[in-house]
Image 1 (cartoon, rainbow, N blue to C red):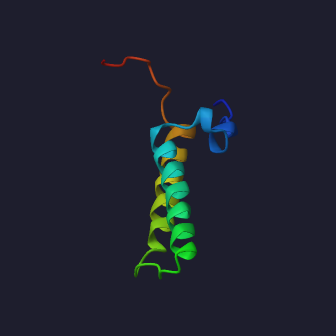
Image 2 (image 1 turned 90 degrees about the horizontal axis):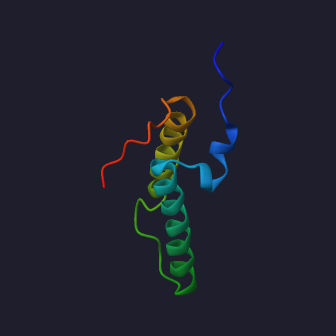
Image 3 (image 1 turned 90 degrees about the vertical axis):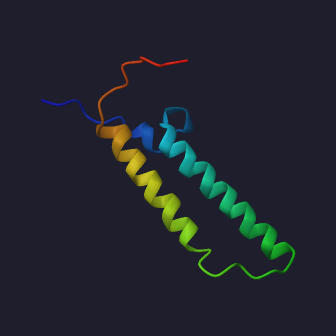
Length: 78
């Protein structure tokens, strides 16, 4: 029987893989950009909302990889 997935990998930044971390950072930066645009009273560029969809998609794919992928063998090249 397979081990249960560690769902902490979905919400704890310390357990994120690279894809989740990139997406999380992207969402934060996009929110920051939207806030700055609102403060300086500039319209959002056309298609700006697609950034959220892209970051969400990257996060979901990274999460699936993190939950169900093979564990890292810790063989890194430096």
